[in-house]
Amino acid sequence: MNLAQRANQLRHYPSAVLGLLIITILLIVSIVTPFVIPYSEAVIMWRGGEDIWSETPRNAGPTWYNWFSRTKLPTTIRFASAEGDGAVSEEVISADTREIIYTYEFDYQFDDFPPELILFAEASFNDKQPFVEMTWFTPDGREIRAGDFSPGNSSSFRFAQDTRLQRRLERSSGIDGVPVTRGLFDNPDIEGLQVLKGTYRLEVNGLLFEPDSELDTTFVSYGLLHGVAGTDHKRRELSIALLWGTPIAMAFGLLAAIGTTVTTMSIAAIGVWFGGWVDAIIQRLTEVNNIIPLLPILIMVGTFYSRSIWLMLGLAILFGIFGLQIKTYRAIFLQVKEMPYIDAARAYGAGNMRIIFRYLIPRILPLVIPQIVTLVPGFVFLEASLAVLGLGDPFIPTWGKLINDGYTQGALYNGFYYWILEPAVLLTIAGLGFAAVGFALDRIFNPKLREL
Figure 1: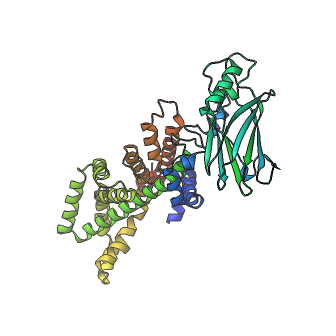
Figure 2: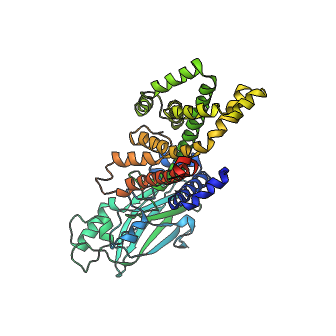
Figure 3: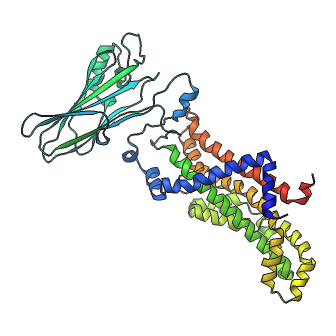
């Protein structure tokens, strides 16, 4: 029975079919992600600050949370005049003065208040700054003067920081110290602070005092939920780390598993074939290596030298080469070495390397395939463990780094469970997929297990 026929038997194992589906999805995501979000762009976005993530909320959960909650939490609402959002009108007042009005209207049907309201303004001018005035219209017909400011080339107006607006809302609501974001959405007919649902409108009146002056505005009503994976304390979308963590985890796991297995098998075959002092050295190295703990070594290297993921991968392969598996391969090769076709190869003058790599090693390849598959999740969890301990690559967003960030920021304590659960679930699913396929392959390729 050839490899293709044996692999075809996987369809008789439901767990293996599920595992193959999981692995296929992970590999597709790993291939597509670098094209959708190039590595250099992902690093810049992940390491960027408020200038990149200014329009996303802080510590917001994923939007799909509303599917399972009776309380409909607000999601982010954004209008950008430069992108054609909202209505715009312009009036010439004099030769040098123009008035431009941006109108942003939206239907607010959420059960909670937004955490932040910000208007971003980008103005171009020579000497005289534009002047911006904002008016807030509520669904019940109230008109609230929301504030005014003179924007520079790149400015922002944070509604919550305007003390004059807060005093106006305190007088209208009768509540001292009312937060601005709550006061603007409050229902005055109900005692206490309750969301008034309906259509809101923000009018932004800009006065431009130069003929060539321009003004663009962006209004953001931040949500308690944002994106498919939520955001962290730096406003970063966690979906970037979840997506890029997939190819990194797959690359680390597959390269480490293939590298250690192929190298270990080759060294075991060389030791068996040449025997004598060559085999003795290999066995002593194996025994010494197996009393050296790998994780503490990697922690020391990450602490005192470098936390590069490729250095960690190289060390994982290096220490995995002389693992106990080398003794298993040695036992198999000792039997293969005595087979008649090996004597025939010797008789017609085949060289040592030809016999090792053309006759010895191919003989046990069917037993190696399940071994490679089952080793992958172990290396994936090793990379995640290093990141959780704070020794992950500082430049690359990974699943383990997400868990580490969530832990250091008290995500579970503050109720941001998604921050920890999303990467943890992906790690579990990846491990489950490879384990299910590996165990099924072991039953197919191992004749002793196939008889059970």
